[in-house]
Amino acid sequence: MENIVIIGNGIAGVSAARHIRKLSDKRIIIISGETDYFFSRTALMYVYMGHMKFDHIQPYENWFWEKNRIELVRGYVTQVDPKEKQLLVDGSRAINYDKLIIATGSKPNKFGWPGQDLHGAQGLYSKQDLDLLEVNAPNKEVCKRAVIVGGGLIGIELAEMLRSRDIPVTFLVREDSFWNGVLPSGESQLINEHILEHHIDLRLGTNLKEIVADENGKVKSVIIAETGEELPCNMVGLTAGVTPNVDFLKGSGIELGRGVKVNRFLETNVEDIYAIGDCAEQHEAIGNRRPIEAVWYTGRMMGETVAQTICGNQLEYKPGHWFNSAKFLDIEYQTYGWVFSERGMKDYEEHFHWRHPEEKVCITIAFNKENNQFLGINTFGIRMRHEIFDRWLNQEKDVDYVMEHLIDANFDPEFYKNYETEIVSKYNADFQKSIKTKKKSLKRIFQIN
Image (cartoon, rainbow, N blue to C red; front, side):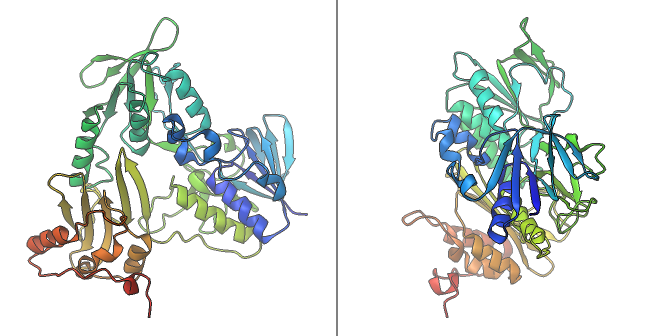
């Protein structure tokens, strides 16, 4: 019986295991040092905030693994020997494989800040990080102030978590506007305002110089690089992005860049070894995508794809049109296609931006100014149908068509306010058009003949 070993029990590794089992009777072993069982990493914040218990974010019952003949090994892989097709777990236990899938995910970035390894300085990625947060910031009495370093999605999640326990938060963001390397300026400004409204001390254009220890080796304060200001705090959240967790593979003969180098079939340079999820790095980026994508749904898709290849149906990884969703405190964010910030805009790209004058609701639509082709959309505070935008991107619809049929894409619940009339009115004024909005059509939405 062929022996399939998967290192990592996140969404990528578990998706691979589940689909290999659906397709075959191969022996499957998942090795993880983080937890006994798979959990939803994106839901960790809700455990800390008291909305869920940790058991609630485990998608499968504990009996699921034995029933599906998926063996679980708890421990950290310390060495991979491709010649012998063997792993070492915790430096001692040897496990042999016929095919190996590396799905070890990411770890928080550290940039050599003095004091970055002190007690009280931590990231927010793993179950261990969640447990550590209960030690470092259980309440506002123990943690009188927290400082968060890094202005991405994990940073704003951590800020929301800490504020849910009334812990004062200072947020150090090196950019001059929040996440403006990703978001166009109008959206970034909206999020700046929203963060401040939630009583978070947002410091834009600010870098960390040093984390200072007290006499017991715990975090006492941080030093701001630009001003030299010393800011007292009891906890520092290091959320300046993540990097692939691949250090244990150095010297193994498996080709590494920032992550594990793979081709379009998620194969490494070593026969019978594959890499998927956050730790996989494409030799050449797919379209406008980054070579490494630390995104939940791409990890799932890679797992499903590599399962086909391992079970005899070699399949190329094709992630399709870019999409993602997140929450900025209580504003829902969705993106479909490509809407670049001003920093990354293509020469042919033009934006239409609309923002509600009072509510925290806005959209930005990107299109090709040379031929009017719709390129992508960002929405804040409006839920949209993924399938509709996927279809319009596939069909290369022009932006006028998208504006005319925008109501079809709206997925907000019944009785929610619709903004399509105001959006299209501004579009007409901005571009001297006379587009009229169509009424919502279920026939169009579901392509009913």
